[in-house]
Image (cartoon, rainbow over all chains, first blue to last red):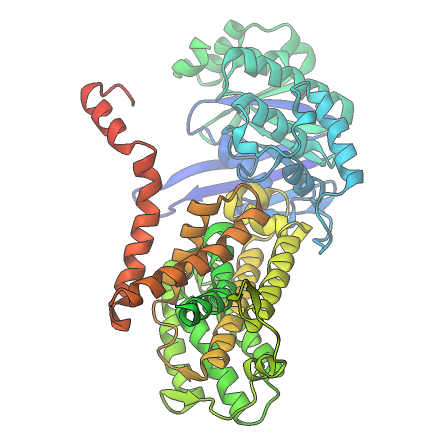
Length: 265
Length: 308
């Protein structure tokens, strides 16, 4: 479903600030794969997400989604294939527009933009039905501006919007990191439900090792722009966070996993 | 008084179309578009020139709108494709248009005396004034303007609720998000600027026909007048929905003209009006904050300092 081959990205090449964000990434996701990605700051997680979404064009290599080569396509040109939820709950929704208007935009993804009313009776019914699944009481607040919602509610809405049109790839970019533990758990449950229901091929970056182990069917660890660990489902199921830390040390030849954020959460 | 009052209403309604254009860029697109000063005069200049050369005034107005749209597209391309800061892109177009407008007019001022214009046409209908108990509230002409503005509001509000309009609003509200949903924000920005400046040019051409001349300086300070209308309207009449905000902008434009009329009647010179305009904008921008108790908050942070 998603094929990343030999992708390399260097920022500020040839200057003192040169930073190799992705060394040479090869990654292949089968349809329905749900892959979690961990790695310390600067490991290349965000860059990987961005080369897939089109926010960054790689220096070398190829990216294909569902058999279609998208390497050089702009973000909006490949948007019909990709759904994305960002870390910042304010990033995935338009705050000064109503819930129904936000959903109408999500529903229009990939479709041609038309001069017809964005929200009509029929769509409103569909929105209500879908919002009910979120269990946030949003189905009765279609005309509320999204800016009035809590972070958790906005993230739930973002998730619904990202998956509304069943994208080929769902990118989750630390999408529970900015929420308190209770809300984060709610979004985790919702994510599993939505991915399961729609059989979405998913790539999820997380800062939470437990999340990375418990969710999905495969785990990747990035370090200095390369995939240093690729753990399949059977092995992942039996691992604890301690095992994961040890595996990292082994892969790095003794270097300890130095990122408080992971160890403390 | 009655005559001046009527004039203020009529002007307020004609300038309201320009103010709605400014609302579209400043508020909806979140783009500080300075093109307005140039495209307003462009609308007036081109319409006047075409009318003098014998073009049908309606066609002349429509062509002025097309020219305004082109000016908006130019600013949009400079900003999105040329990566020039939006503020500067607008200023560049504005300054370029000053010369272009002089080229169009071939002189600094084009009188429309004895020409058939849309305004003389409306005058010719000899519509009855709207009067209650002998006092004229609205002239017959003002009623026509009101109807025109109502149609413009309806179109703007409808447009902003279409699929494309939603994309446009999201471009101003959260460009990252709307890109991830497949909208080309460069395209929506350029389109928004084109529509806004077409409206501004329409307003410019109508004002030229109304006042009976086009002047190369007629657009100077127009952006501030537009902003004054938007901000005064929002402060006084609210902006909770698009419809409400659009009506508020029109009323803001009328209020602005009434304030100017009062200032003139109080003995201020016409040359003082730019100063009055700036003062109105400053008051409208600061007053809501003052009323919300900015003073109180400032003293609190002094004592506590824990608001980080």
